[in-house]
Image 1: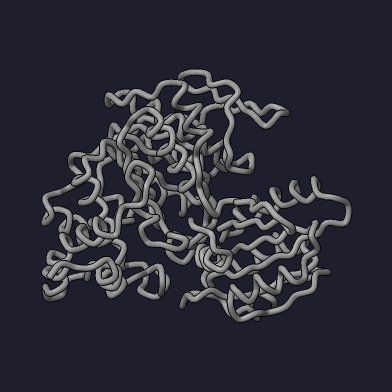
Image 2: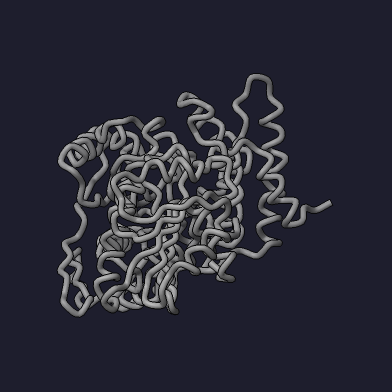
Length: 439
């Protein structure tokens, strides 16, 4: 009997899932690439026919992937996009030609993978195939079936031992690196940089985002060690009207991007560099495709501003550095509001994140903070979030569900205020469901 979509999702959910329980639950030594390589080999290595672009980093890798996807589609390239996590629907992680795959396609790809997963998991003393490894394999099967030309693959955790590093790319990028997943990747930037640099491959070009000096040094050292040619992020020139220029192999003038925040211009520059790298593989990306691709990109939950009174901002920031970027965007948004406009913050975050660092970056902007938790076993207790807010003049309350927290925020906000919902993909996804928004 063929798997239904619901059965396929349930099967993946039955496998070990680091995302739900937290990677540290299983210990750092659990990560390795042998299992996913064996699984892909059993499937006939479906990735072999794909031109793979591999993107790692702490902040901006998903946005860079989404921008490149949009640009390549404008150039007429058949693109597959693999990202994580999702907001509402697991199929958000696997897109072909800009669209979520159908439930039937998703189920068929999982059904193709299942017997090989079960055979590997039945072997004595074998490391079991995880949710992430099985889902990656199913995605690659689906990409091969749909005859995808370029597959854009975002790493999940780190780079060196992430399951996606079992693939052989034609181009790579490393976005901004900062502190995140320190229990697994290390508590020094140099250690984290070495893990991210693990995606570098001999002869495969890589573009680096601007980095802290100690990170840049590690990346250059690792690239030289493996023989990976590298380039720096293309230069960006900002203009008062919000447009920007990117000087890469070609100069792209007057570009516009609907994604809010100047940091997205950097992600766009990285995507442009990757598009130019693909030229050596026969993928042609005309300037107009770059221009149109940037203008048309959509990436929900990344400083997504919902029109209305009050204005609602959805942002999946979940670490200290992303909270600081979010703070800059919110401050700019509030400055443009009528006098007296304030911020009501709805925040829920995973307990294995830097809870104090995250909330202390944002709470000083707010006049009210609603602490909550999503339906996730990793969610921090709202009271823990509240306790982490130090020396803040804002009113702080704790609410048990995201939907209730959103209702409390809407009740407290004035029409000219801004409500920001942030802290995790789970929180933003549940808020989208409460608001009736499709991702």
